[in-house]
Image (tube, rainbow, N blue to C red; front, side, top):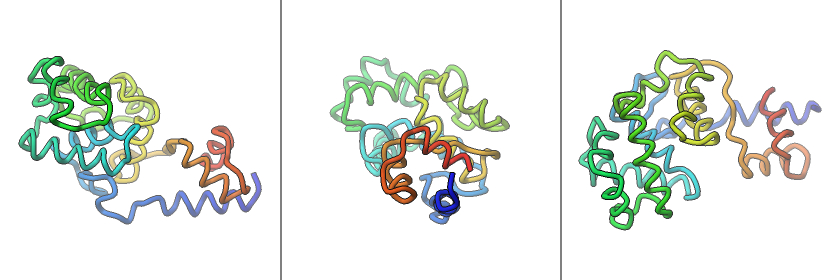
Length: 195
């Protein structure tokens, strides 16, 4: 890779949003997260697909705080009702634009309750990046969202090590245009990020 690409990649990675104390919602840099905050963060992350990120995070706040009463044990509260009852609340909760996105919250929440006693922190506490990615994927959070979660945890100091940026179409476009005047392929983006 040429020196210009390396320089651009370093500037982007150095300034990837860490200055905003609310960049990752309820999680704050170098501060231990409460169960409540970790659970709300994971809820927002799970919702953050096929809808604007701002909407996902606003909906997570609204549902967890206003509708469900801001419980510490958010996943227990979500799954205390049956899946069919949860599914019937899709329009009322307006959590995700797709019914499957709404249902997905309950099914992942059920796994979090069963495997981690409803405490999202147990997914990443005292774990390596690879172990955390494995656990998130085992919950069926999805590869891209899992990488975003891990990146956030690295940003705030909950995980240490080298992260992996979620390589979506926007990342490929921005990096590619900044470095070479055209969109990068996924492989080209990965090489720039691996610097």
